[in-house]
Length: 183
Ligand SMILES: O=P(O)(O)OC[C@H]1O[C@H](OP(=O)(O)OP(=O)(O)O)[C@H](O)[C@@H]1O
Ligand code: HPA
Ligand SMILES: [Mg+2]
Image 1 (cartoon, rainbow, N blue to C red):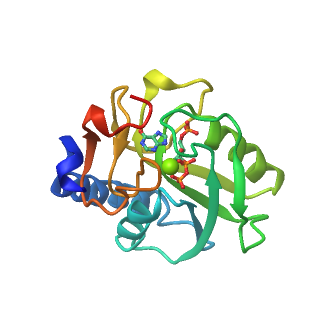
Image 2: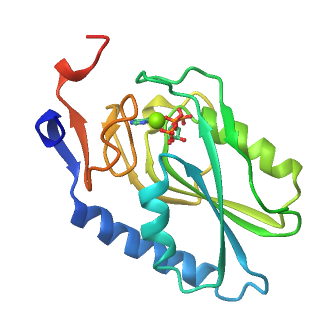
């Protein structure tokens, strides 16, 4: 039903948490002299776990903001069309923005959102993603802080879903092939 559906664990809870601690240290160092507060924007739902674990380790004054963007539906490849289901709460003009994502896969979502952010004239925008799957990239997306590069496998857990399930796993893994509806 949950753990039983996992074929293999790709990153354990401990590996994820250790890497997040390193990333948070780096970000804290990079922004320590920033005069203004930092706007940390989670791209939900996938980024929920990573966001909350990362921001609590940042030793910086940050503001929370959330966008909800969706493009995968119930499948394992992008539909190519990104829907914004919730917009930012704040006006980001002149602000430092750190965009926090769970995964950059084809790059479609972040390519779309990058244009959207730039139109709103922030002072700076950096992208922080726990995972990157470079072999699937359809459009180039520069990642400023990347947790792990992953091979071409559909991953679940730690925020990542298949058909909205498995987000609550504390680790990241690959499902057994028989779980996929299109098999
Ligand atoms: O680089 P891409 O190919 O665009 O894939 C990455 C995006 O796909 C996932 O979101 P999804 O649309 O599944 O929504 P979710 O966050 O609610 O799961 C993930 O959280 C990223 O936002
Ligand atoms: O590998 C993935 N797993 C879950 N959601 C995703 N969205 C893009 N890539 C993935
Ligand atoms: Mg998803």
